[in-house]
Image 1 (cartoon, helix red, strand yellow):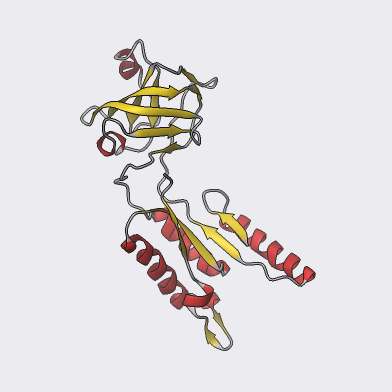
Image 2 (cartoon, rainbow, N blue to C red):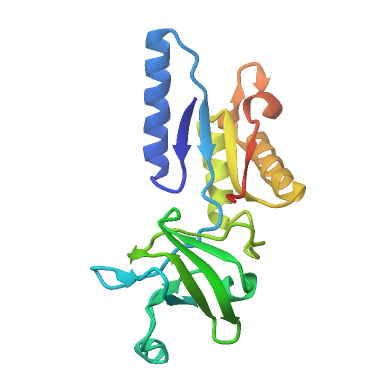
Length: 219
């Protein structure tokens, strides 16, 4: 199985990779499936200083929701705390006291102390510190994220996956059966409309060649 990560790359990049996989598989006489991995909603840090921000273990850090960078006036309210921007606007309303927040694949681990929804400020205790740099991923294990599971980018990528003929689709941030059904239904509708999904013998079966495999929300 060859995985295509749709968080990165262009349509032309993915097309070239699939072509190469098919060429190599044919040359070696092997059957190699392709899996398109949807990005899903992205929760990540915004921009910080180039050298990063130190987040000491045992201290506290303030996360500012829905901003690309921290304004000077906001940072001034927290002179004794490192302050980090998080681009996801729903952070303060989604978390609660005791919620876990992981930054950079868990290299920095936080526990929410308090959340001010009006200001979009989340104060966290630092369980395991480190240096926070720009655009690192933020994970909220056990938190019901209010963002849509399927973004506009995902819908566009689904159309690309159908065009390229991927065999499987991996879905992120699955919360309900409806999330899975939307991806499956969307891929089938796109396949039915797409000339590239048809062969001389008629339409290809979406249930066999366009199956999808939901990837559970990280925990």
